[in-house]
Image 1 (cartoon, helix red, strand yellow):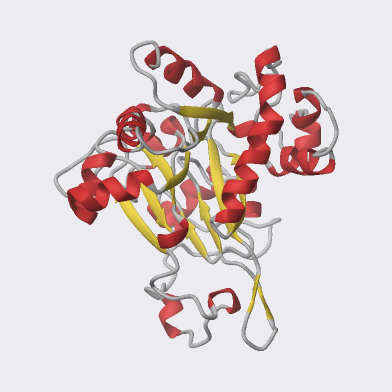
Image 2: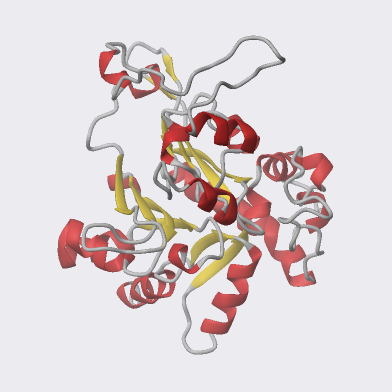
Length: 336
């Protein structure tokens, strides 16, 4: 995946030469090999001993904002089987997709076993199935002792959920994506046993190492707004709870990173914990990276280093160059 300037993108798609420092050129009509990984024989070391019964990625929806007969809107179900599951995005109809994949009873079990739901951004095709999932889980676990489900998402999503909960309780706890960035999680871990405020957990743009939400940026939105006293009191206990939930599921971390799409849009990294094989050898954990909706950007490139699986959106077909710049999504050709 290349992180390209608009000039590079336009010239490449129209078959022109691309200059690099006034020297060598590159032609757009490159020979591409389909599924190059099929020519590789070595299995990544992180997959040693991993079977079909350990982890499964189910693409419940890949149809962008326009669902069709064969593709629903965005949702990815990461099935960890006996250790539970994680839902990445939850567009309208996600519950119906779970029923199609697992059957009615199987979908109920999948919803009951959810450990966390992560939402990338506020656009409706990524979260409007959320309330239905949460309400069903509440009903299914009504007579069983359980904890409210943690929903990780952009701050605007909390406003939506707070408004919805005036109608019915969704039995959930909300955690802002900005609290789960790599820099924020490092701050949390270094102060885990101390009494610190939310401001210590939410770094500035400079501490975060990203300029996507800097002042004057299209993406600025709520990044620099202070949290309420309730947020300050709740964020560290929630992060501690999330850490315990992930550990019980055999996961090391769920990390959010900013991407270029709309204000407060994020991608996610799901990292499995390291483990030891029968000979005592340390096996690194697998790593799943999900882009959410985004243009190619440095933050996604950095987050994808060492990924076992990268799930990257490709909203537009090769001829739809103008739409890429208008809607800040990706072009399929750029990702090959």
